[in-house]
Length: 293
Image (cartoon, rainbow, N blue to C red; front, top):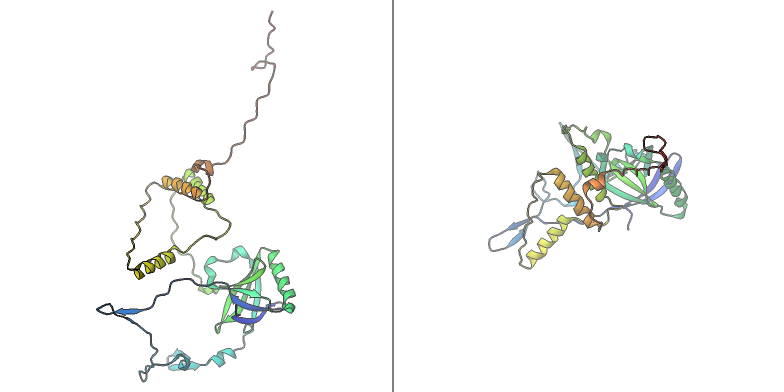
């Protein structure tokens, strides 16, 4: 795969040359904007870039960027942005190491990239950084410039590779200002929820599919052959929470090929076995038994 970016990881005074390649790909079904005419004719709707001064369409190679102010627009060229004195222009600069659990999941952006050592010279410092991260519960927070702006990122180890995740800046994360429910739940309900979580636990994400994409593809295939598809029935509302948990546990266990078990069996702790009573020759009340004549 062709590298998106070539540079280096700045790790103190250590420089780790890396090539950046995308770690994800999109498989969504893409639609086009259309205009349906009478008689079944379909015209494609296109987006045109038009200059407001003369109303003429403008090609992408003719479009620049500008910053709007109260007195007018300031044009800014790509060359001027590329010449900005950023230390991250050609380097992924590690700024700190933090515990992995301290990263707010809301900070994760859409970008994820694999970092590769482009040559044998880069292999040694690459492995050094990888081992330093692997032997701790920390991740590296770094700054890097990509798509003509400086970004915040997180470096961690996945398998034998270093992975760079895009992060949002701290001032872009909103406080969790949502009302917290105060409903009391029973211990049986908690144990049922734990049992369901145990029954649904897997080691990997393999096998999880995008059912919406599958349904869209089936719809398109059916329409291409002049067939009609049937809409699925809406799920019934949950009335009995415990019954719904019981049924969910059973369904999850059947999907994994496990034997039948109730929620209480899954959620309850095993009680220690009772010790066998010691055999004695005395009476139960501790008195010496009388001899028979």
